[in-house]
Length: 293
Image (cartoon, rainbow, N blue to C red):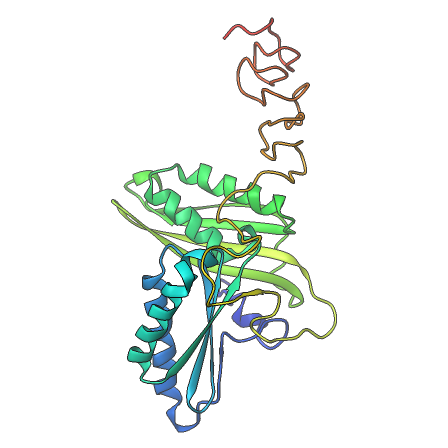
């Protein structure tokens, strides 16, 4: 076939709600263009704020903008100063009354947009694309996703010929409408051209009627308060609940015997560590004496 339906657009009205909620009437086109301006402006304005999506709702005289972010502290600013600035700037842009709400994303590893942006940042910092993809897959699966697929396309590793590579783990049933699949496209602006990153994350299946309100499942942060709210999610990898590890949370070791193949905790799977799985570790799974390196 070859024609790919957008996984989110495909599920609209079934298990997904819309990111813009308003009645257009005769001015539908103007409102649509205004929504796009707001989203583009916020993406540039809070580029480091870990913004996943912007939900826009309208009444007759007011626009309510809800920002879903993994770093509410950055978006809110000290004592709410940053939010007030953004509010005034959006008022100038739209010439309407604007209200801003901030929703905190508790687990950024399960948000496709944030995962794609994280990989893009790593590629821009010249980290190997395979390593970036595999670490993202590991941290997402660790947070309890049912499956994840990541595809990168472009001049990977600076190669002359553009190509695409993908890695996946778990299940991503794209044809199943009740499967809650989050999808995002990110771009890394490298010195040798753009590299596109596509991310699909399956979070399980939805049975029964779902509330399609766009802000469902988020945690609201008071937009007047400064700093990071209690329990705010830090963007990036977390230690802790690794299915395969102990206390350290990392697949490759950590306290408490993190490595599946290693011996008693401590050294992980690097050379010479106690219980490592390379030559020379005490109790490693390959031949070797007590630590040659």
